Image (cartoon, rainbow, N blue to C red; front, side):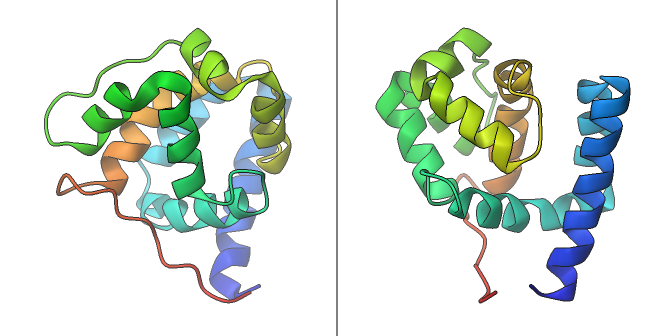
Length: 142
């Protein structure tokens, strides 16, 4: 694992540790998404998701589409307002088993994850598509 990946991993590990201690998931994620480290997060998220059944961010986007969230996802990618999505729609699209898989991959509690995804996915995908095109980060060899 590259030094950069270790640094991002340590940052995220610190944040998830604080989440477990305080339960203040939303506030910590808000802070993280508004920090300078946010530019590194898409690559780290993609590499972490690569170890799941999604195979990475592209597979995750495909799962959202297959689960009926194409219109919402398209709005997050396109320029303009992001269509909100409810936590129940995330669970319906992905299923509880895959939600639990994501929670384990990111060392987060599974219970609040659909709500967090509903809150933050539009912003994260929007940041991954600044010009209206879904830009997946390059994966470097481990």
